[in-house]
Image (cartoon, rainbow, N blue to C red; front, side):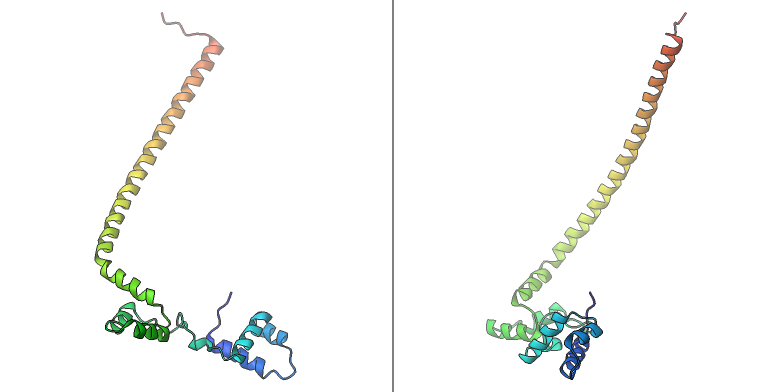
Length: 165
């Protein structure tokens, strides 16, 4: 699925609105989008929904996101209503602010924990590697021993029991 830029979507909508007697199916086919998608975009345009570049949520590709710390600093002294207004303008949710604040507060401890977990993981992987090598060595020894035992039994059946004098 290809993602179109907001400008490309707007251009397709303008082509569809100024199509003359050209059918929408043909415009959708030429634009490599679904007919129902084009119909949805046109109905949203007619209902005065926000354009693609004005919508909330992730910013379009090429535009960097505002770091969470800047959002936290901007909303530091605001009351709940002002925070809600700010969040709507920026296209974020108020619960994200709380989540970012918690992450920033606990970042030092989680970094130490993750470092310890990585060290422990490395030790366990190394131990696992050595155990696998040991298991392979023992499997080979067992296979060799069983092969020798089978050969001895076959030799005894063919030539008889070996008597020590």
